[in-house]
Length: 487
Ligand code: NAD
Image (cartoon, rainbow, N blue to C red; front, top):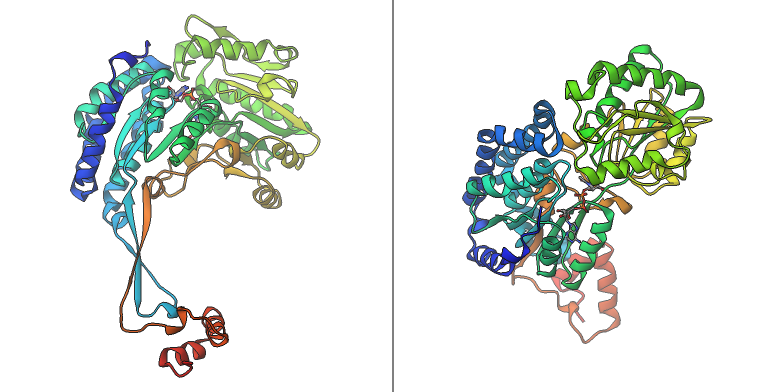
């Protein structure tokens, strides 16, 4: 898609949003609710348009689209509608005795006009999770979805936009040049989902205006697979791994399993279990069954093909590996011990290639994981409580999930976000409201009592009084209040 940069007047769009925000309209609970309800109507009434767009952009099966995008979004909007009043209310905060008489509260206020830049892989889910939070918190918003999923972006810009108050919420289509132009403007927050490369550009641009940013980036999420005790557990683990890898947008997902770590002596069993699950859940011919999404475009297809063509990689394939460029399909592919220096083990794969790295002992997975940049998620399949305890305390990641994968994404009660290089800022549910709010301290003091010793001129006695007060010496404080120690 061509960038429509010349037709856009981003400055006047932003100005209109600023004017609306200044009017106070977006702060009203009734406005926030009306926009959230409008999003709900969009999701319910435009289900077919969303399914079609996701099929065109990614070949995403409607059931998968509902499971991963429409369903979680409906849940998120309803959760926000049910809790909005509570989230918007101020919280009373106790103050120390020395401040008597005083009261204080934390009052959430919207940040202002915020920019949401999103990625193509979960085009509705990612854009709207952020949008719901920004609206619930009372902000005006510009959303720029990704040009790489053009059908979804056009449903967001042409269809969803008609449901929303365009004086306060705008969806702008375009690619990097529109993104760059937007970044030159002054925002009250930038919420970015995408690659580390562009994340750096966003952060540098935001620094010019001291704009706060949230970066939801990618990385390599490992799955550590222990030799589980029962055959049921082994089979279930394999099913969940296959679903989290190949059944989630063909692993074009930031929290998809990137690679597996397994003990050498369990690897052959695991490979057989994974092969069996691929066949039973996705079928023998993925083009025919259509249960696995396709690669988003030719560029990404070539990128993945190049990963397979690096020396030593193709030889490590133990299942799959067939490429269908015309239909942008890549067979679910398992590789055992590809070279650790190859791109497939260095870059985020973001596609249906699953390297399995064998280790002498499963405990070696801790050092292996720690030797790499921190991941958005670590998945561990084990029954060993001691190993769980060690992994929780000795590794760092956005989340760690035992015996399943991806489930952390759909729980609105859990914050979603990264740590270290995979990004910062957490959202979903109430955390999204917090992401787009400032909790303002509002303190109130009365005139009844005044501590004479807080003012100069300074002397020894005042020092003693401060020491008593700050060390919770309440007798000292009482004496101070009674004025008995007044010099
Ligand atoms: P990307 O960085 O290429 O693009 C993201 C957004 O930035 C798009 O809207 C794009 O148009 C815009 N953009 C591109 N270049 C720009 C520039 N120079 N200036 C301003 N804006 C620019 O990322 P992508 O390919 O869309 O997404 C894939 C990446 O996103 C993967 O790394 C994946 O792991 C990550 N991701 C992370 C999460 C998360 O929640 N952490 C979720 C989904 C995807």
